Image (cartoon, rainbow, N blue to C red; front, side, top):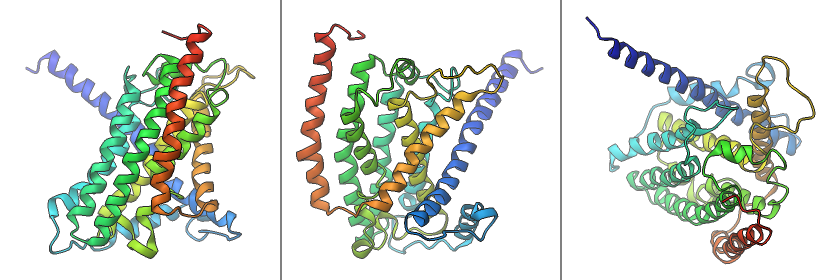
Length: 338
């Protein structure tokens, strides 16, 4: 006879799997629609029509592209390290999707309301570098290797700026927990008092997700396609999904840090059973997704030495100055939360 303990464990495991699927499937769908939004928005910036053939207004274009890529032949270079060649895109995608596990979509609506959620997010963004480095090295191609080195150098450099900006928010709230950070913004969103820090932070996440003007590893005129030059078919799809998943994830985290997450100024009272908090967080996330594409359409690509100089010589001293200034103000006015 099966014990009650075993049935309870099985039931809890199933509930856990359903929780994960409820978060992951919409996240992957949002990644698919982020690609069509980008193409449509770029078309609007450049006075073009954009994709409009597959489905209503071209809405099904991402699924057509995915199907085309999956049906292509996977070509593996003969001199490559095959284990790492396949492992790197998988690991990059997994690390970019793991970040969704601690995002609060409403009060109590998170897979894990982890007390050290901010540290977990920073750790995952650091681990994403390994997939990129391994993909460039395992392909045994000079172009891919150069692209991965460039990408790794920029990601590691700008991680420092990103961590500094996040540290200021932690100093202001006194917590590493996302829900606590959201609740601290009920009076005022952090984008108002911390506007210079928001600008630094946004520059850092543009570099962290390798977007224009920091997409040096994809400089087509020099490096073909960057670190995934040799990857085709499904491995390429994984890299593509990982890039856009990290864009949507970072947009969501930015909304939590600076726009109060799922909180909304109480202009109206929601008496219905519909949970508007998740919709509010989604709309705020869309604002930053729009900004990612807007920057891509507007700004030219930076030269590589200018990219590194901007980080170490310009942004880092400003970030360190704010790390000293913000706690000083908190202590001077006796408003520190700790």
